[in-house]
Picture 1 (cartoon, helix red, strand yellow):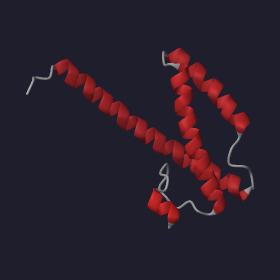
Picture 2 (cartoon, one colour; picture 1 turned 60 degrees about the horizontal axis):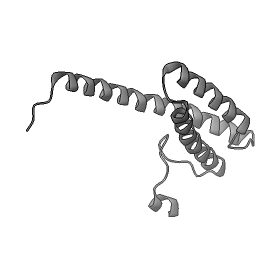
Picture 3 (cartoon, one colour; picture 1 turned 180 degrees about the vertical axis):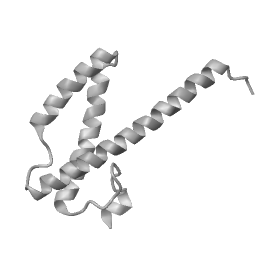
Length: 112
C-alpha cells in the first residue's frame, strides 16, 4: 500500500470537516424552509415563489463570483436545493410530509 503524504491527509481532513459543516448547514436550512412550508400551507400560498427564486439566484451568483466559486455551479446547486424545498412544500400543503427534513420519500414510501 502506498504511503499517503501528510499534506494530502491534512487536506482530506479539512475537506471532511467542510463536508460535515455543509451537511449541518443544509439540515438547518431545511428546518427553516420546512417552517416556511407550514406557513405557506396555513396561508394557502403557492409552494413556489418564482420572484424570490430569481432574487436568490442573482444574490448567490454574485456571492459565488465574489468568493471565487463558479456562479453557474452555484446556480445549479441552488436549483437543486430549491426543487427539493418546493417538493417538501407541496407535501406539507397536501398533508403528506412526515419525513425527516431534506429527505424525500423513497419509491416504496411514495406508494405506501
